[in-house]
Amino acid sequence: MEERRQFVKQAVNRLFDYEEMGKRTLGVQWQNLTTAEQEEFVDLFQQFLSNSYESRFEEYSDEHVQYLGERQKGDFAEVRTVLKSNKVQVPLDFRLLWKSGQWWAYDLVIDGISLVKNSRAQFTRIIQTSSYKGLREKLKTKTDLINDVVLAR
Image (cartoon, rainbow, N blue to C red; front, side, top):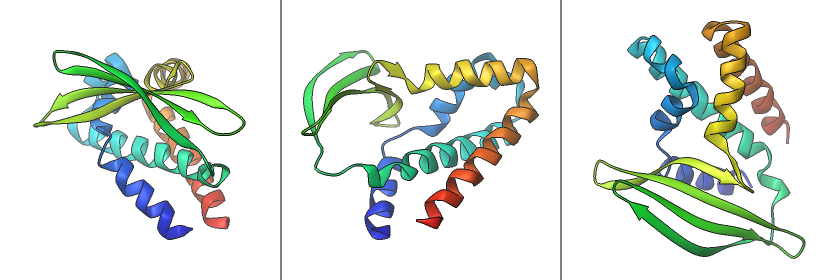
C-alpha cells in the first residue's frame, strides 16, 4: 500500500503547479510576502494538500475516471472528467495553465467546488482574523495532524 501511495503522490506532483495554486489561494496577500515566505507557503500548502488527499487514499477502490471533454482558451484549459464507482459519480475538473512548455494543473474542481476558491475563502478569513503568521501556523498544525493519521495506518 505504501508503494502505491508514493507512486500516486509522485504522479500528482508532476501534474500540479503548486506555486500557481499558492498565488491563487492567497490572492492579494501573496504580493505582501517575501520570496522566502512565498516559497515556504508553497511547500507548506503542497504538504497540506498531499497529506489531506493521502489520508483519504484508502477510501477509494474500484473507481475509474471517465474523460468528458476539454476546452481551451489561450494558455488556459479545463479538462472535464467524472470519477465513477458502483455507488457514486463525482464530477472532477482540472484547470490547467500552459507554462514552461507543458500543461500544469492549478486548480481542481470537485463536484462543482473549486479547491483554490474554497482555500482562498478560508485563508482570507484566517488572515483577517489573525495574520499570515496565524495561517502558516494553522497549516503546519493541520498538516502535522493529518500526517500523524496517515502514518498511524
